Every structure is written in C-alpha cells, then in structure tokens.
Length: 216
Image (tube, rainbow, N blue to C red; front, top):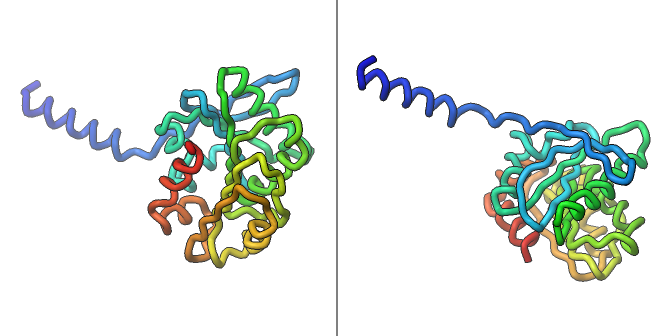
C-alpha cells in the first residue's frame, strides 16, 4: 500500500469517526439496600449529579441528541453523572430510584450531590426533596422546563429554575419560583421550546450557566 493511500484511508477513517453520532450510553442495573434501579453512569469526581428525564422519553434522553448530550457535557467538567430510568407503573419507584442513586453516589465517595430534572422529571426531583429534605443532604436542584407548580421552601438547598418563557409545559414555573425561598435563581429562555436541546440552542451560554451554578 502506498503512503498516499495510507494517508487517504486514515483521513477517511478520522472523518467517519468524528462525524458519526455519539454511541448511546449503556443502561445498567444497580442495587442499593436491596432496591434495584436502572441508570446510565458516566464521569468521575467527588461531585455527583442525578439526572431525571421526563415521563414520555427514554432514560438515555440526557445522553443523546435531544439534550445536546447534556450528561456528557457535565461529565467533561469533572462531574460524576448518573441518569436514572423512572417511567414505571409504580409512581413511587421514581422517588425510590432517586434516593438509591444518591446513596449509590455517596457510597462511591461522592461528597456533594445535585438533582437535575426535565419536565415531569423536574416535578419528580422537587417532590423527592419535599419528602426527604430532613434525611437527605442535597446541594442543589435544577428544574428544566418543569411541570412542577409548587414552591420549594427548604432554605438549605440552592434552587435553579430554567424554563422557556412561552412554554405551555412550564407555565406554572414563574409562580413556583416566586413562592420558593432563597437561595434561588431563575433563567428564562426566549421562545416556547420544551426539548432540552432546543432550549440550550436558543440560549448558547445556558449550559455554561448551569455548570457554573452546579460548581458554586
């Protein structure tokens, strides 16, 4: 094989590899205190983030094109990320899965944990904390275009509300933000998008703002 051919083949392989869509992360089973839950885990570090997808999507939502590979972007900043699967006939399964994911991360040496949820997942993480704030230590909660309509009144947790200004899904979020106690922040994104990737695309510095909030 000539040197020109070798160079051409290598260049072609590099082009295909770099342009190919990201391979989906693998869903794994975890067991914590005899409770089994499914999740995708990536990244390393002593700061953990639990990602909770919406009701009508798959658990790899936060790791694919519909979220601009949100999970991978967090992991690239030194965060340990675990995205749970919670769409289950038993509604309490999601709450239990969040708690088990937190305990799993702490068993791996993670010192601080934040929760990030989209749509119904945002409501689920808020309900989890309302039920468990006295026994579970969480650093922050981030709701992305959440359907949650209730206040977060626990003063010991940092809160970030991210939502599209004209989204019908998150129309309760302005009221929930107003009723919630400090410390709290909100980022209102122009438009009516509900999809995480579209929300991020509409406000290019949003991912950076989310990461800065997490790492405060």
